[in-house]
Image (cartoon, helix red, strand yellow):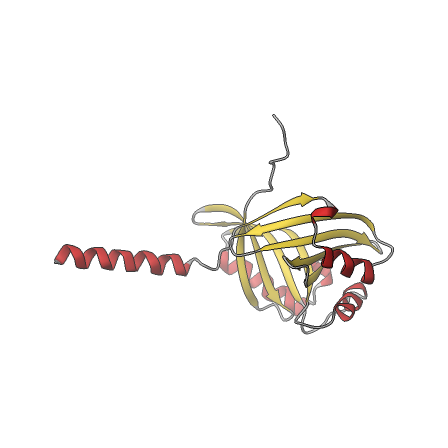
Length: 195
């Protein structure tokens, strides 16, 4: 009877440990052909984006969902438009520099990084315009004007060191620099490389 109780307790502890680490979602992104991209997403891009250069299409898989991204350059800025599996717009992101983030917001972000990593290096900063069920035309207009709005998020990719070593992390902050979520990124997919 005592062994049975110990086994149940051990299993319960393992489940609690697993749920405690559920904020980490592993993702992988790989390039795809335009023909493999959702038709609704292609139509949304065609309706709302003009005068862009070098568009590339990607499929992103993580532990919870599949999404699609179109990346291109427009007006000297790099954009990334993310869609769900059905082709519905999820968000638009712009590659930015730390000087593009308001000082108070950036200070809070750096404070979070200093408190959660023994060492870190910022690899990429993006200003995010989430869809929040607004119409696509408005989201594209706000993103292409590069407006700083209260609904914006900042997505930061860092190489961070914790007790278990260095990992790539994708961290999301709100417009005020408050932490929203974190996920661990896997290394790039090199399946296309032939040996």
